[in-house]
Amino acid sequence: MANGVTAAEAGRDVREGVDDRLEAFLAGIDEPGFLTERRRAAWDRYLALPMPTTKSEEWRYTDLSDLDPEAFEPFPPAAEEEAAGAEIPEQAARLLEGMEERSGVAVDVDGAVVHRRLDPELAEKGVVFAPVRRVARERPGLLEEHLFASDVAPMEEKLWALHVALLTGGDVLYVPRGVRVPEPVHVLRWASGAGRLLSSHTLLVAGESSEVTWVEEYLSPDLDGALLSLSGLEVVGGDQATVRYLALQRWGRGVRHFSIQHIRTGRDARLSGLNVNLGGDLARDDVTSHLEGPGSESEMLALWFGDGEQHFDHHTLQHHAAPHAYSDLLYKGALTDSADSVFRGLIRVDRGAQLTDAYQTNRNLLLSENAHATTLPNLEIEADDVRCSHGATVGQVDDGMLFYLMSRGLDRKKAERLLVFGFFDEVLGRVPVPGVKARLREAIGRKVGI
Image 1 (cartoon, rainbow, N blue to C red):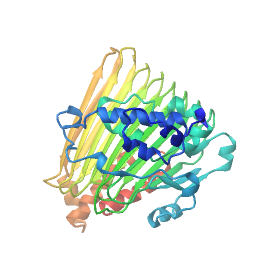
Image 2 (cartoon, rainbow, N blue to C red; image 1 turned 45 degrees about the vertical axis):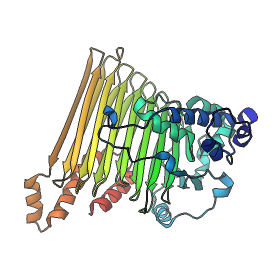
Image 3 (cartoon, rainbow, N blue to C red; image 1 turned 180 degrees about the horizontal axis):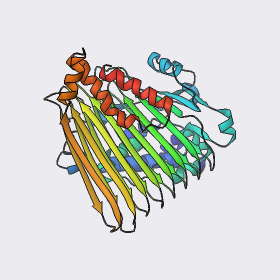
């Protein structure tokens, strides 16, 4: 065990000024001391920072004035042996039965892993797929180097600090140099119970010339109150690594979901990410791609469909820190009823990042008079030999296409939904894994009513 000190032992010697609320949360957790100290440092930072407000440019269109994170009771982290074999919720069990071949699968219920499997041949090759706390005990060096090491922006810091301090569950996927994981590693995260806080984290480290696909789904029933979800992702792509990350958010009503994602690429690495937002009352994704190695590539995809009064907020950063790198962002959203969305994207090119090739596109489709989309693409370029472009549109359904479908016997609502599905196809067509693509089409079709 790292440092030979558990969280419980560390908690007996409470530092002056440490908040008792965190100590109560830590009291039953068995983890290495270095992880506990990171929690404490994060909690101190959380207490020192104000909540984001609409006075900030980055939060202007998402009002958190009625959100008090400390009013939510965090799910207590369960010991691994206590959670193993626990009952899997029926909806999650059905998804497991319908899954295509997977190299690894885990089911997380309220932050506790109730089911986990990894292909034994991959384990023999050195692949690690395990909970954060187990890896902290068995391979502390891996976490000390990479866990919570992201350069978090000021707009993210308040919720990131709370996420780190109250981390309930999470996964580490480590793929050694030269190892190819043939099928996706798939994680289902299930949450239940209003008034609770769930903080989950994914650390994905891909060694040089390795290849892996990670799929993460968020599920819950509709709740009669609020649930706060804090999700963190850190991806480290080694030189010439290929990493694909896909997140499918299908929380039930009542959930407020905040996801902060940081991706780093080595030389000639290839990283592709897709975020799909369909559920919850409010969902905000802050996604940053750091192209740190020459010749690296980053593909950033997202789509969302909002109805009722759902609110989706997307902030992205394509940070070109190295020369000869390529990034391409395509975000598409459709809204109906009184739903609204925000997209704010930035391409940042550092002074030495010559021969950068970067694109940013956001398209929005409105299906009702009360739906609203705000789009704010930006460029910040310090190099002089680059090719960068951005574009954004907000528009209604094409009347000619709508008329054509209705003339073939569809009512207006079904015709609109079919057009939405076609609108998303540009993104779905770029999903490289056929089985995952089919799963996404099914989930989106269910949401839009096709």
